[in-house]
Amino acid sequence: MHGQKKPRQSRPLKNPIYAAILSATLLTSAEIEETMRPIRQCLAAIENGKASPLQLSVMETSLSIAKAVERSRIIRGLDEILQAGDAALLSLRHRSCESGDWRAATPTADELDAIKTAINMHHFQLRHVSAGEWHRIIERLKAQAGGALRITEEEWGIEQMRAACNA
Image 1 (cartoon, helix red, strand yellow):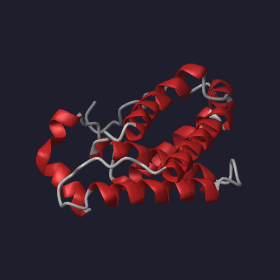
Image 2 (cartoon, rainbow, N blue to C red):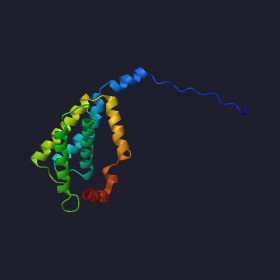
Image 3 (cartoon, one colour):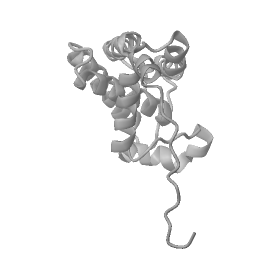
Image 4 (cartoon, rainbow, N blue to C red):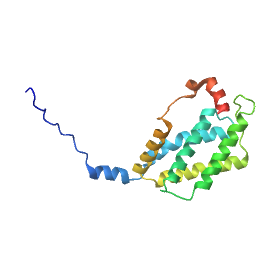
C-alpha cells in the first residue's frame, strides 16, 4: 500500500432542487415572529422611556439590517423612512447620554412615529424577502461586523452602559 494514493471518498451531493426551493420560499410566519419579537419588546421599552443601551442597540441593529435589505435592491423605496428612524434613535441615544451616564430618555412624538414607521417597514420587508436572500444579507452583515454577538443585559454591565454614552 506504500506509495499508492488512497481512494477518493465521494462527498454526499446536495439536492439542488431542494436547495433552490429553500432559497426561493418566503420566510415563514414563525421566522418573522422570531425576528420581530425582540424588536417589539425594545420598542415598548422605548415608548415607556425605559430603554437600556442594549435595547437601543437592538433597534439600531434591526434598522441596519433593514437598510441592508434596501441596499440589496430587493425591496426599494424605503430609504428615507429607514433614515428617519435611524436619526430618531441616534437623537434618543444622545439625549439619554447627556449627563455622561445612561438615563433613558422619553422619545418625542415625532421620534416615536419615525421609529415605529421604520420598524413597520422592516416587518414589511420580512414578509416579502425570500429566505435565501434574507440569510445572505444576514451573513454579509455578520462578516462585516466580525460575527454575531449574543449577550444579556446582566452580562453587559454598568461599564458597557457608560461606554455606550461615549460611542
